[in-house]
Length: 85
Image (cartoon, rainbow, N blue to C red; front, top):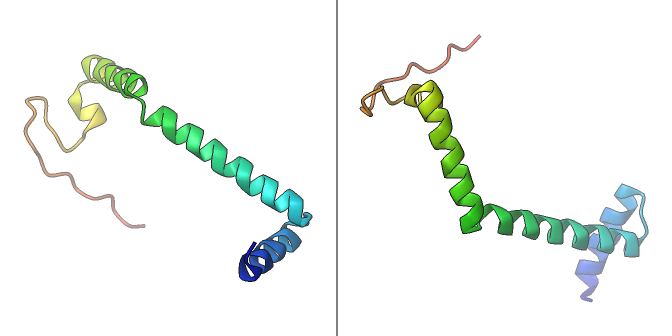
């Protein structure tokens, strides 16, 4: 391991109250979890289910419910930005 990388990991471990080994394990676990979530979200099956669910919502509530900038005929419309308080 490069000395500068080890120093960064040691600093992060100290800040988190973990040993160097625990810090490395935590980071590896987080990376693997993020990869798994990313793989699921990018899968064709997930996307098909997601699109199907959006279609159900549009059918039930209308396109304006999902996309307020589009009217019921699919035309673009202006949407006023929320007022700053």
